[in-house]
Image (cartoon, helix red, strand yellow):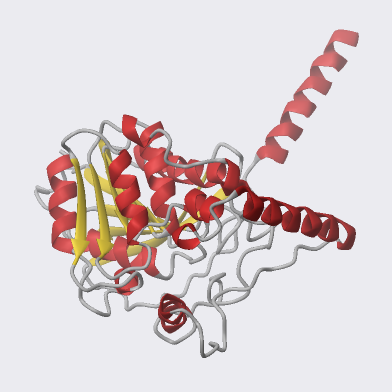
Length: 353
């Protein structure tokens, strides 16, 4: 009798653990609320998947309506690509544009919101982590690897802006990723340590930043809230750097504004990105065995991040593509007509086979 009670209690505990560890139900928007028009060449649906921290992620899945090589009812496994970025954006913005375009070219794609942002789970909101956000890419690969439409041996990723660094880190960690593209990438660890163009690359400046974060943590804990750092500055001051004006032209206008986007609204938590200072993302980039294509604009203020990443990569299957005349945000939504979709299509088809 006593043994039966113990077993019953154990079962209840396990059931309770399963309930506690089950993914929280996400409330996903069903209407088309993207910053770009819907393509008639692909089927779109909402999907969810979880990462190893138990955070459920929301994604838009795009599947080509016409699958090349499909014969009758024979199932054809598709090459797949997971897309995320820019840093502070949502899947209804740039990531979705890339994902839909690549689906038009024959790939099954997902554009996902990273943990703590957009429609994805994770509390508190608007936090970022080199570890968790790299894991978000790996979780996307988990999802694609087990999708009945996908060939698990043909999976690639695209990381845009700040998620470019996360994509490189993911490729260095997970051999299931057979090809990686970064576009207009930021190395978030480098900019956290050094500031823009090395402007705060000294111990005194980093100590001052650490002190500011520490003070803010105390205040946040006292008030029970997290102070937001603010998104893209609005209205623009007259002396705003030209690249800040470029960000404003995307995130704060009808061109790219979205109500769930941190950059379009009140930004990250002040302490939300602090761990990047001590956790360099690209340390293992030199051990990536699979192909990597880095794309950047010639006139982008951030170009040096891709050049720095490229210098860390080894082997003859790495390429840095510089787009003449393009600035950072030209690669967000292709207003300037410079996103090299043909190049990306060829790159993935050559390497996901």
